[in-house]
Figure 1 (cartoon, rainbow, N blue to C red):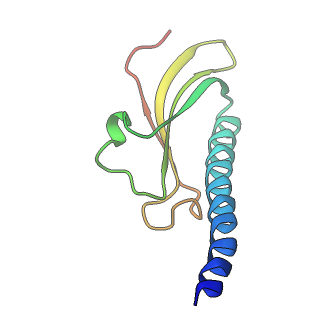
Figure 2 (tube, one colour):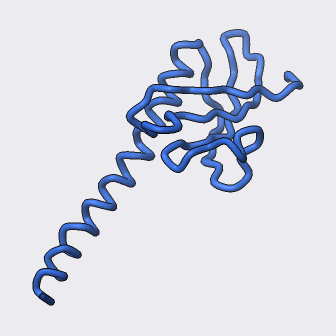
Amino acid sequence: MEGFSVIILIVAIPLSIALLVWHYRRANILLEGWAARNDYHIIHKEYRWIRRGPFFWVTGRGQVVFRIEVADREGLRQSAFVRVGGLFLGMLSNNVEVSWDRHRR
């Protein structure tokens, strides 16, 4: 039985790492795609695990929340929280939700 446990670990650990890498790459792809479709240039982005702003209580385990600052074509800067992924399908979903800050710079 010990040999089987070792084999499971040899498979499970790399698979878990690969899925985690895919999860965050997919989150970045969704964010970058949203920005490009809306003619924004991302100036700054950071993952938010705890301080998720308006998405704090309503974010599933398969979703990712970013805090971003973007500039539009005219150079107007805005900040927002962005949640990517679906509640049930996680990163298999193309959902992108944005909650803009009220002030504009």
